[in-house]
Length: 143
Image 1 (spheres, rainbow, N blue to C red):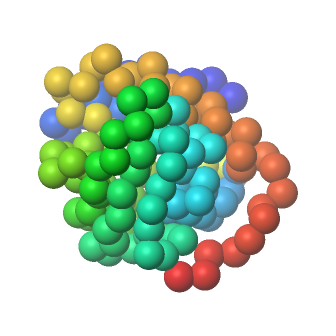
Image 2 (cartoon, one colour):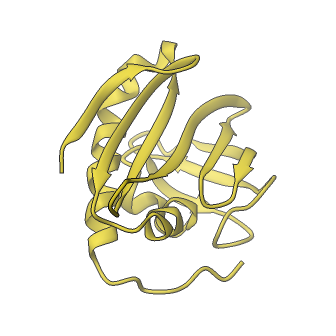
């Protein structure tokens, strides 16, 4: 499916990809901390008290390459639709799922304007999420 280019959003940039996957499937992938290293090029590992995030979830991520461990905290959570977080105490990407007319869903990363260099990482994440969504689901959300 076509990838959408980074474009101005309310306060930043958006990188998204339209997929044939159901929005519910995309949401499950985005909120499953076990899958973050599978689709997030900048995440090597995740430590979380729950598998699936929710409002105010906390944990830590290990950054790919440098091995730095950073705490995260979910700062916004609209079930099935959107979540945002702070990583290392700073606002980071927003994660969104939009249903598409006629079926399928769009996965979207929201970035602050200063994070333009992170656009290629988000594009890669979109493609990885699309591949994960096309594979059989291994488990249903349990938290």
